[in-house]
Image (cartoon, rainbow, N blue to C red; front, side, top):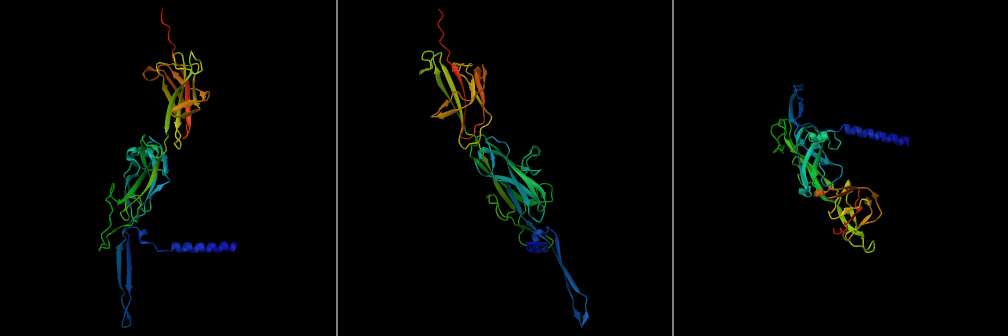
Length: 367
């Protein structure tokens, strides 16, 4: 075992030596670097050594432009109405020269009317989360003076419209396009040099980038892109309110009718569709008709068990827990209001609130 370990160590050392002694490729040498080659010719005349003939050649290393944009992490889940839903990207300058990078975005899939304010922010702390300070710094449209092999973290955000439904998605591409560095602000866009300059001091430009497959740029155009997806996970909530006659002053609880003096049970069922995101902070507000009176002796029950069938809500009584609030005249137009909060309702589940009212009994005529 020890012999094998030593042998592997020797192989690893040899590999390191080979790697460290490999010649540098042209793209690894900074653009504008002068490479000088000196030549010496020695000769004799009549057996006498003569003065060496020498010459040299100098040329400047050309600019090789390569940019890489990489989406960080998988698709991100968001919700209808979300502000600044965020996607993280890395932008890397793989060129052998400093460059500026123009940044743009494109919605490559999804309903454009359901997303707005797509902007780019500098992820100054690199944590892939848009902080309040980064938001306050404002959106950016380019990166200035990006050094060779420097990676810059950015965040692309968008506002999701309330009309976006569960299952909707938005594909957003980030494009980085190489521009000349050195001047204040965004420099001119870099283009491929036409042929090889005859002046060895001139730095030509070669565009050597690939493409990110988003359809927003092509090979060897000085730009690169990548895209990521915002998936909308929304609750799909429906509410059904139904009434059940509990008793009347003539028939009691046997086949009762909604006549003056009758007691009515109201069942309000809130259903969240299967596969939808969990609905939270659920508040039920029910303005009572002026023709009924709230049954305060019965009270209000929340988080009750209920079913919905053929558009009719049926509450299991008793179920749930006593809660909710009655506010006389607290509803719209001065109507009485019943309100209550329900616990979170997961996709495919139902929560309910129920209470009772009475139909005022007929008043005997005054003699």
